Image (tube, rainbow, N blue to C red; front, side):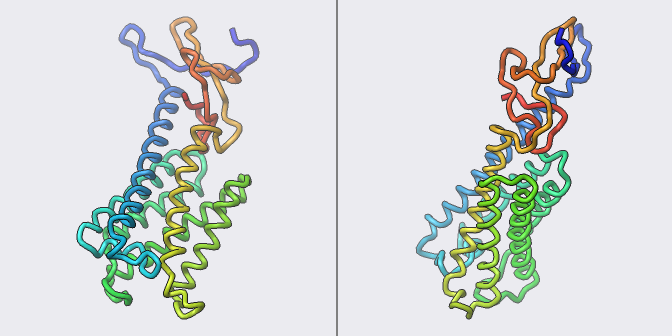
Length: 266
């Protein structure tokens, strides 16, 4: 029926008989993970934005780090929502990157670090002396570093102006944040150390949202089949090369985020 085009068969429920429905199941799972990642990243971004609006007269965004919001009454709720939302977004995208080991590991590591900054609160004041405060500080640093490394890895492997922008801006902001944190006297960086840290956090959440949008719209990886499903002899047959799905739905995001087992239903 489809000439030389490769066929992928998947099943539907027929006469109470259930067979494997791999392409559609993968498509639904991929769409679900993208939805979770996108919503979680937006929750994280909204929570951090709300902290800056709601506690503008309590926490100085120029001098104090983002973790300072967790030390004020009710601020710990918004901080936890922001960090955990970002962690869930990283985790969902890690599962979406089912064929790419390094990005997946980096996202999972970053997700774990964002959880740690919530579990281990920082200390009050400028000096960090408790074990919890040290874990918080270095977990935040690792999260920033790993996310920056992810942008660089993807920019090198995939190219493109957007990825190069995220990589370049992340490296610049990360270096500035590190210098301001550990060498606060250099260029009076301690007086404005909150600025690059907040910019880096917003940039990384924006990068997560960009990943989700790219998965849904363009697909980050080429090579996976676009296909069409048609009802043939009581079985859905998946034809590589077509651009319409069951019921005429456009098959978009072919192989997005490394999923090479099937295209995704838009």
